[in-house]
Length: 280
Image (cartoon, rainbow, N blue to C red; front, side, top):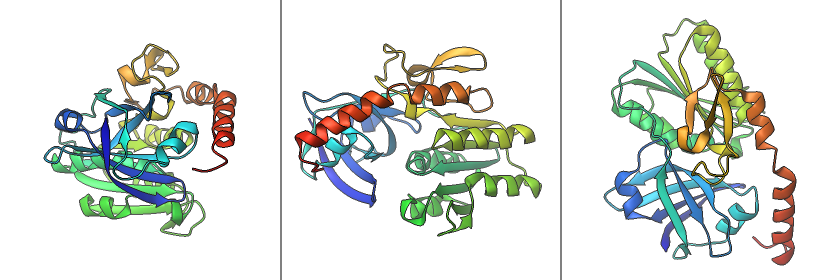
């Protein structure tokens, strides 16, 4: 059992939990994920590590309440325990290299996932530019954390309620047009966002890494639900990734697979809400 030592509501749909998991915290690296199961009758879901503290033996997860299991997880409070917390899984990001100038982009909940990776790039001696994007100001995440580690920091909102009125590609495209030398881009967030980030950087010939964490299901490669073509070859996001060359991902196939179980996910969520009287 893994105790929740801290819980925080980040915005109306997103929560953060710091979980006591010494064995995981001791060896996990930026870009990896954990598999959790809330209780004995619950399903297993993958959640990317948003932070870790080796000294205190804790791992931080950030998640949106979008379905049955994440809503069930959201009902737990500090002092409660999660039944299973397995990891670290997946291949870590290669953050030890000094590339030069790195742009780390997070969209929505992806900003929390991008944070440990961005921090590691900074610690490796890179000049770090961060771009945080969200639909509205209320949905922005990790602004303070990103500002602390950034050499340059930008915020974008779709509705213009904070920062630049536009998308993350608005700022990225502007930096490229101004002739800024960018050696690597790392992006994580909604698939359409990663797709257009990759299109923007491909034209400029800038290497780009994207994280396909959102498509993972069982986290072991056994279910096959996270398979996607990358560079013409079939890959499994959970065991071959979750990070891949953004210029080689088949985004149309990826978006199609993301919607494959949508009907069943909605049925499961509706049934759970009926059983709990709509309480979360």
